[in-house]
Length: 384
Image 1 (tube, rainbow, N blue to C red):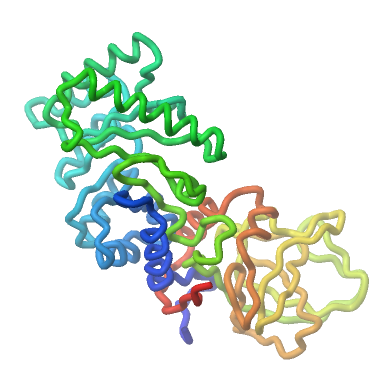
Image 2: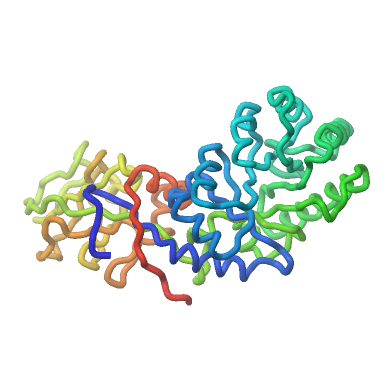
């Protein structure tokens, strides 16, 4: 890509890379298992409008969302398949989403009654019963108790004719715990079929996530729900690559003598003469203040300029960071800066930024993609 928006910082999004990640994801699914592509949080910051065409091109039939705005964006992008809300919704949300034909999660008798009251004479949407199954304990029916089994029986009656799915969310993907969770979920599912008029062929059983898929264990379901892996967040796997790059530009270059301090609170002191470049990027763009070099001199983040790694110096400001470019005398104003991604054969990767920020790439991608302009590029990593 040779052009950039008229902005100081931006994200480049590669649908081609998303497509490649999706292909590898589909190849890894257990036999006879479909995919629900999870594109919550505006497709992890990549833009629903950029991702849905990729999913449609590869025949994905189910998309997972959280908000009504996401459901509308999915439909606006031309998707006509099934949209699943992957959390319980308020009655008002359910009512507002009827036009988008959103399939809803229900995990309590009280919740389903509230939805029925809000809809009045309107028919219920298609429903998926969420089972806790020794799981997240947030929106699922707990079948290990008499009260939970009674509530589930009432949900089955209240939702008769509208229940199309049974699901859970595994809280852990450590091998031993995941094996136990899968077995518990299968027992809960079996209990429902044994205690209802539901027919197995009419119900979609779904569970699992990117981490479940990466674990290599088969959750024995009709469909797995995966999101992060589509955007290159897959742990140590050479087959998957990020589809987002965070970039900015050099806005000034200057030489400063030994003893100068950099940024707020003078956290960094120059121990020799240095040449420094200011970059139009800061915490307003989602570039975490944790990326700064510490006051004790511990290594902070680096950026790439002209294909070389340059340490970020001093505190992270709202709209500016400072990089040491002493070893790059040719650096000039408007040079491209890569804060995450590749340039000239080098890379600022996920591992270092996760360690510095104390969070995960899904958090960072969502933040960067929502705070900065997004532009489309044709970059794609070669398969390993």
